[in-house]
Length: 409
Image 1 (cartoon, rainbow, N blue to C red):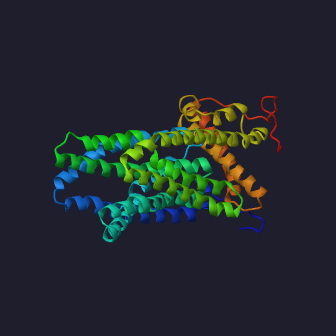
Image 2 (image 1 turned 180 degrees about the vertical axis):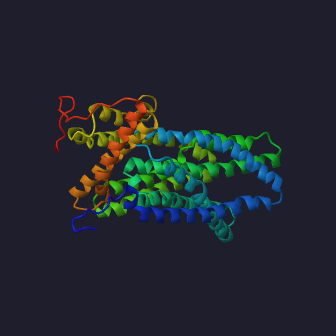
Image 3 (image 1 turned 135 degrees about the vertical axis):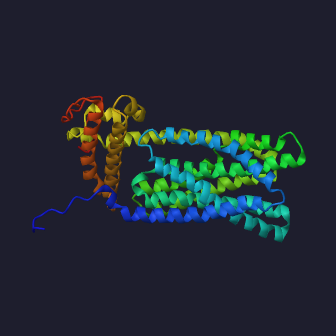
């Protein structure tokens, strides 16, 4: 290398490759251990039980009832996140963590705590300890651990409060799906033993599958909200206290619901309208946060139009609430979706960099800006080839009364 030669360009993947590799190892270890515990607790336990055919048959019925509903529910948070949807593989990983790792660890610890409670105060006290004390702390911890892993190891894919809520919802939906398989299976076995007309199973399905399917996502969303606030802030104390406060709020909500259901099924029914109002209010709040994210993306792409990297039409396309559909059906398909993804990544990287500079802190996001601009140009050319025509060349942006110059320009 000559004295004045420039170093080779650094790829985006190499900037945080070590952290992502460590995250993959952490994830694999958690899934392996949690999956083993889940397998031995429920499958091996059923095989070695008094009536393995009936136990396994109940689990099969539980799967038939729980898994199709899970497939339907996971689309809702994905559709809500209209701007910069999270990568499919990270969402699938979050779902898998909740379903396997979080369920496996929680099942064993809750069972141990229930057994200890039963030894100390009898069967009813053991059930209370397991459901009302152990379950809220343990389950929200292991579900929250999945969100924490994404926030730390996959920081490039975790931008703020919306991402925290979406990832938390996927982790919790995975957890709730497997938990429903277990509860439905037990209810089916109980109906068979009592020779009733599926009354227990029907009641369990109505309560868990129809009336309260969003209970677990609501709990864990509090933890996700905490990690999202930590990602957005530049204050060190908020980065520590926000995730902890979100976790404790999740535990409190979980404990309140489980205690009501344990003490009296009628008390849970009385609380149900209040929970439905709370879920509705939180859903509206999420929609408002999604709109805020869209405004952030647009604000930090305006100077890209000014610099001649985007056209106004492309800015409107990227920041549309239906950009994924427009990309698929009007802008060339997969290349256009990649163009939108890179533009949103560029915008959010600039947002993180601006906040870090304002708070006199450091962030890796600034290192992504220039490579993402180059990739944006490449994706634009791919989109033009997919459309089979040349796209208008970006020109310097002239502010209009409807779209004024950003205040920082």
